[in-house]
Image 1 (tube, rainbow, N blue to C red):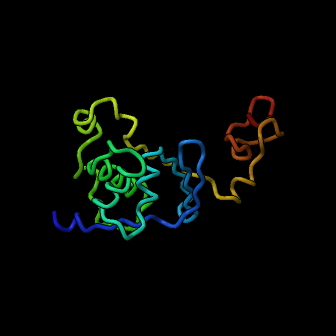
Image 2: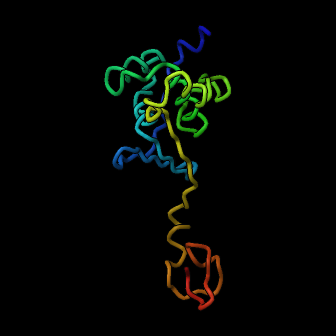
Image 3: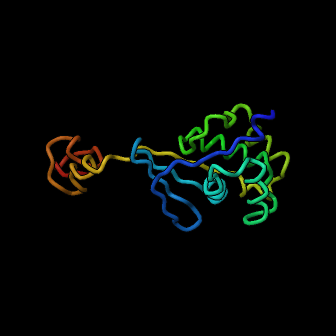
Length: 157
């Protein structure tokens, strides 16, 4: 347990942009896009490689939401690690922390909005994205259409 207390997670150096209450992240090495809700985004931003998990928890309680506890931070870190957004390998795996359901039982539904959400999706490379036809363009095969669907009238859908 002592090792986990001294873990200083460090975020990956990637492109990021805020859109409303979410943070969109693009990793050009893996061509993966990630969407983080405000809780996951706050934890990810706090992972500077200097703060421990306890420091991150105290920082978030002071700056973001006093209801955030260390278990919520640990769950978020495991989700960020699973998504490949952290450099530190000492972060506990998803199974080593409480599940979202167990956390919900502990904190109640009032603070359910504080639970972290990390969504990952495969993004096409710029060359691949530029090499397909947009909707309603003439086509001969599904592979020519960005949607992957060449319609009955030989137009991309």
